[in-house]
Image (cartoon, rainbow, N blue to C red; front, side, top):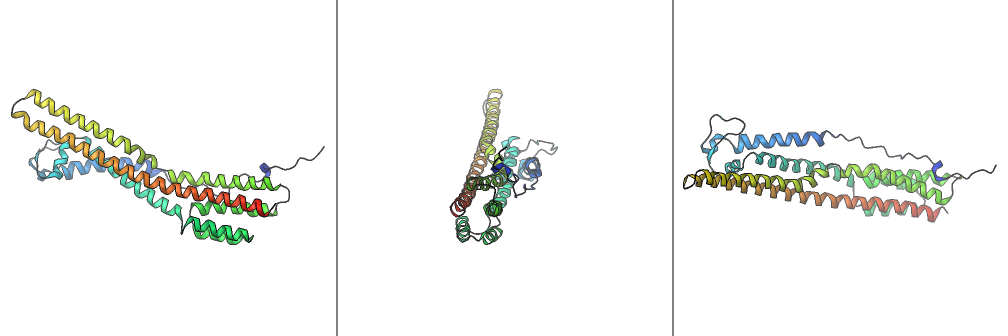
Length: 286
């Protein structure tokens, strides 16, 4: 029986890059903490009794304070939707800081294009160890993927059973598997920013509608001058919710676009590194 030629599947399939050991605790804990913090800010800072000419001494979950002193305490009259919007704004800040630190770490040291150029130089001189040393210096996602590919690259140089095409396929597969482990960490928690971008406006619209219902309800029940104050409070409630919702959504959208742009740059560097490895091996080890 004729021997079958080994295929690329005969090569060890697992990648040399280990899965990231990140915790998901911030993903479910941060929204709860931010909403609670939003209520505390609304209830005890914006709704402080000293900030109103007619405070509600009995307090409770939602004190009925009247006559805010200054615009800051006037936000309190936006109603119970305001703490939700404040909590969402805090979420944008928390997840923006978390993504910023993660992406800065993933970007590594120096320019990705300069890093790839150095690796190309070392591979052109068939110095794989020097290329691996450059990956250790880079310390980012591009360096991690390149390092995984270079380890398989080094293995394929000494392999005598596979064809060149099979070796190139093995290197490419290693790069793809390493990339699949790096990208999820870059995109993690961005869903919160994208969701707040649209939901923030909808929550603000809900608060606006509630404020207008309150306004016209007071106008219909009391009428005359007695309804003027209630009408003003209802309109203020509507406008405060609108302003907070628009500000929150705009901030979330800006941060989301900034981070996706950064991630696209890292992804381009990863793609370039994979192309560099396969092309280098195909041209030098035919």
